[in-house]
Length: 423
Image 1 (cartoon, rainbow, N blue to C red):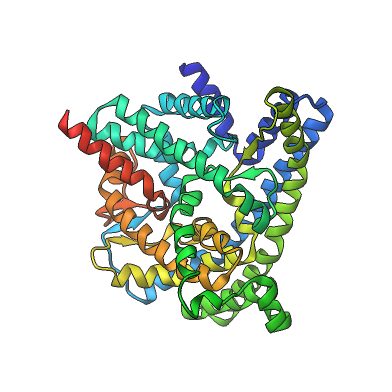
Image 2 (image 1 turned 30 degrees about the horizontal axis):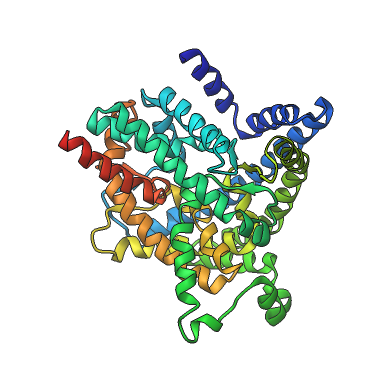
């Protein structure tokens, strides 16, 4: 088993831009395509992910100094430091039960597909770390391998069903035909986003407010275009952080570029997935008549929508304000502030792209994330110590907004921890 895990760990460590072409090429061959066509599809997907990563890095590089300046200038002092999803994922992949959780997640997906309990084939191996985090936390606190692995089964089974349920809207709103998001920290919010949208539909006045891209652009003309929205949002954030004028202008233009270029990279990536998506459907029809198969990918594809990215960026100052005013919050948002767009996909998708509802929903999401990250802080700090992570100087606890965004998994954790305490 260790040899199998070491092989997959090696593939994961290559990064998504190398891992995905390999996976897509293999899937193409399994679904009966020629090697040349499969390889071209895989390479196109890899190039698309490289493009997404380049733009995301460009945006992060521009906005990170702004977030740090916001924290410093407004004198935030909280005891649990946000160390970011990168460190959080490393902690999750570093625990001793990872090989068992890895195999369990794959087996869960395969069994659910065979039993027709899901249409999503999850090839987003890297993001297995979401379920690994909770499984590792449970094993740390209960010493029960059974409870740890059962948590992974339940948490991933839930997100596979959410991925199926939301795929039609991903297609309609984001243009992702045949693609689903089995990613807990993004798709888990559908369980809250859709009920909130249902509620908005029943509130007089609110139900009639519609800030969709088409309506905003028709009202504002050129100022409603994603490029101009990005310019204003980037500039306002940098100005609020009291950055120098040259940095305000650079941030504004970089965010404007991000809102224009990200959808184009997503479109390129989707070009590479067309062959695999179509051949997957044909493969399923031959063997299981009337059944569909979705390709489960990283929710990075979802932030190509201008309003998803806009909502996420506007939540940066909101997260800082909420961190200061929410009673009981202990989290100092920092490293994961730039990851907020990933958590806001289902603030926008349920309302079919209504920015007004997305902003209200985003505030609610952000408050929940802060409380979940606060709850998780002692456990994440213990896991960090277990794998040898050195806490930053003058830091009492560590956590991350990404860990907090995996909200329903912490319900699983609390329930299973209580069960472990009884037995």
